Image 1 (cartoon, rainbow, N blue to C red):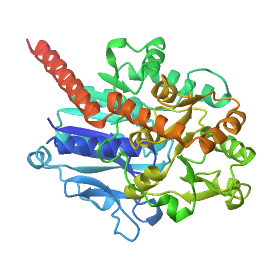
Image 2: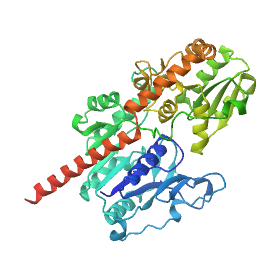
Image 3: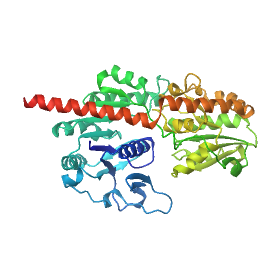
Length: 418
């Protein structure tokens, strides 16, 4: 089965990681996967994508490595080649961010030409919140191609603030168009219930959670504490943006007065980082590491950490949370999106999205003073991932869904011909 995957390669975000991990696993299982993604002009070096195909797998380019812009890569339109090889097809765009994408006017035409030449068995779109998402069902219907979407904008299960209200609006806008996709993949039952209430047929919505490679993300040795000279290490990993509620966490940390033997590591970057760094720094035991693209370094950080903190106001299903859990790290997260669902029943600590500062001021000293508590929660966290959130099971469920959708498409086409 040849799969045409439509997603993002940059800038780094959960959508990018999801596309890379899923397509790599599909490649490992022998599927030809053509990757269609948005790309800006190659004349702007800062816009170049930072991962590429190498030895049959998508790799993140490290510091100093050569990075080829998507538009530098030739698109081979020979169908005989296209159906036997992995292809990369750049789609022109005016702008792309971690949240949304603005394609050029000709992007839909380029997409249709590419799909017509590639002749895949199925199209899977990891939706990038772009206008192209709305016309994709029409394009695939014209080409008689079955279409699957992964819809993963963050949300809060309760309308408690302006940010969560905006995210619910996104679901309301998308629902009428998602109803035209053959299947829509979401990460939790909460998301499915929301889309069904908004008019998407229940049979078209499949719950396939985010998954993590539990061989790669696993407990192990780390020199992190020795490098930092710390007894306890707490970590935040994600964007430094309003919806992530990072300042509430920083205030809670500062008020808890964790002492000189504890560190809070901030892994990630975003629009609020420069401002927050001026108020919360080394004097408070806070270490700003910035964005870390090297996966091995991120794994070493998680293996050396005692606790992961995710204070988000809205979420989908945080891959950072699953990665930390798989590494045996105790996790504290708000009940935004599906994160509370992941940790419920003793696999971690679930916070309310409101009053994060006060909750952390009380909780953090407990983890500092009782390391055995963090150890126990870390064990339970890994057990939960092994039970429900492995990437291997995720891909197996996706394979079943692909086969079902392709079978339905063929039956539909044969019915039209008879």
